[in-house]
Image (cartoon, rainbow, N blue to C red; front, side):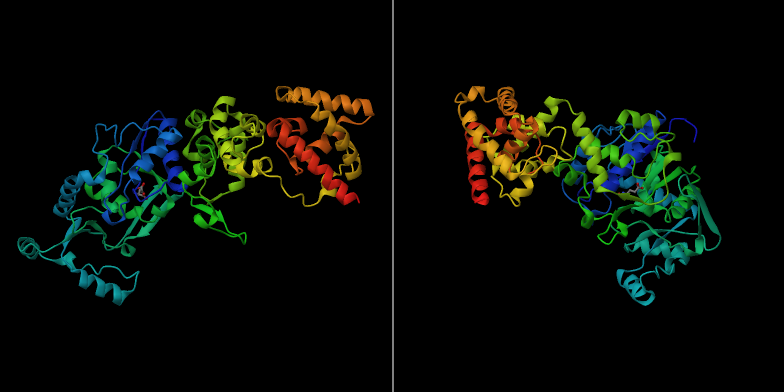
Length: 494
Ligand code: GLU
């Protein structure tokens, strides 16, 4: 593809939440436009009145805002090709549908619901419409219209021949015309179908590249026939590969709730950063050339993105990989920005008694998701039951055993108790105290730290060292946990 500025659009139906697949479509369409310095439009496709969900448009627009996907034309901001909500464009579609009838590419259909239902029954789900009204004479049509009979307008698909179009990702796609239905363009309620409305809008809005999910790959021949019928230049098509999830048995199937969170909102609620989500999904079906780089800012993506890098094979959403991206983005967050998100979550998990700022900062380099905070800090809030104390107190490198630890704890407890001034209960002083003790005893500092850390944390993996955890816990709780550890070790040693 050359680099002439193009125009793409994101055309969601407001049916509730922002599925990751939809967000990926929005992102790819956006990046493609931006990579050429082109235009990006947002259009709300709400002509299926039965599927409307209140508030859904806000969810879509909020998601775009939070992810940094800005648009040049669309709802709220408007633009020269508005309105950008299909329900506000009803009369436009009627005019174009009637024009198609006049040109002989569409026809009025007066078949009743009952007749269609009976046909459906007779022919089965794939059977479709029998083109009954296609051969009505102009006089019959006029009489029916004058009598006020309800009608739909259907596309008159050629009865023979093949329709072919070129998809930028999937290549040439062909369909026998005989295999296509005379689809409805305008419904009896006066609303257009998606099949018709999006074609008219894409044309009127100057969309040059239609980017969307591959579920539309095989219906696109019908859409290109509409372009041809109007005498409009066909747009370029870029259908995106399917998004799959991994099932428990290792097989893959269409990404759905049973694989995990599938909406942008649920992922954010689970503790993922919008920028990490965007970075990850940018690579779910697209691959930059000549680089192994994985972390990309939106600006970098805008530069690099190209149709050539889009894969046609299905992309599998890997939650572990998303966690990796998220951990990288959390690590890269400036401390104050990180604290704004992490401290409230830590406070909610452990209460106000512990030093939550300190605890949050200890976790900064260790979190894969903000949703992991409650589990990561549970040991601060509660004295966890020690499942296997012997194993916990044993550390080869520092040569500790439960007995060695007991000896250490017995001796450091009174030293720590001497620190009566809680202002002196800080990391440096505590470290100094334990180090001095270790040196005096000819012990490895690591052994002393090990014993104390296990005694106060009561678990093996902790977000900080012994003295850091003691500062988070505070003097009273730390001393009390060491006393408890001594008691427990004495009991098991008896
Ligand atoms: N409203 C359609 C959807 O949400 C848009 C498909 C398209 O982009 O053409 O699936």
